[in-house]
Image (cartoon, rainbow, N blue to C red; front, side, top):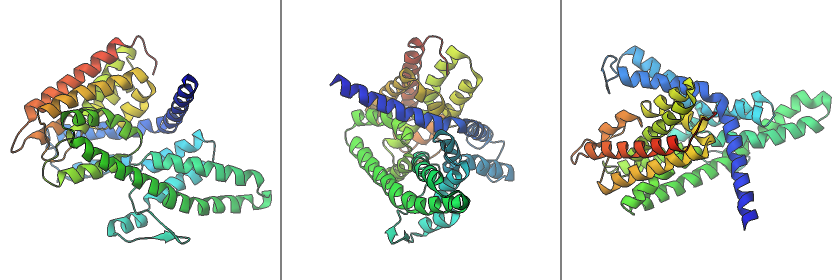
Length: 360
């Protein structure tokens, strides 16, 4: 039994190491656009009101910041190519085809497509990470094998061509359906947890980090929209607000230990900007004690929020200012603030006392 557990643990560690290796190089983009979002939140209508949403400056900076996340399949594909030691440019195309404007428009209009007679899963891959990494991982075997055995005179033409042709059905017909399946199961899980009451709320908050790690942000959004269709979201939106702020507190605890500027920037980006990727993928995911501190803080913050019936009545940033969404017919902003304070204190204290001088 111990050997099985050791093998499972080693496999999980290896997978997480690969994920970190594929995502770490994109941190400058994530931190940069995350801080830009913080800047817009502070100067925008949610805070100081200096920049109205209708101003050209606000609009331009907003779509620039959004581009940092929407095109993640391409950024991650390039870094994944380095991790899997394959061609960066074919990898970039592998990520780019998932978010082709033509494909996205077909998804939006509901048109069903097929390739080589195989049905394509019509789903959006914008902001996705895991789909791109898996696609490049598979692509690396195809490209490297063809490059090794192809006749040299034909290599420059047929290796890229055959790799691309092979990756089209694999990416759209295999990886896509897997993502859709996981997304549907996530929605079912969230609805089941909602029915469990406060305990379900606590569990939902505790697993948000793993939902993000699994690259299921799109499914997360779909579930949130499903719950919000009644005008009240009793679990998911505030779980994300809670998660981002506790993540910021945990990352700040690590900053007090290592005093690295990028750690502080990631903490601010998570809490104020509502953008978890820099802190989660770049820092906390590499540190098991920090990750557990985050989950425990999420659990207790979520438990209090569940007991006191915290609800969201609108959608906004997942950052600190997201708490204003709990103002409504049955306003729960006070209890939302208390839940956030509980979770942040628990996460911060656990992370701080379990760490000596750390190296991130």
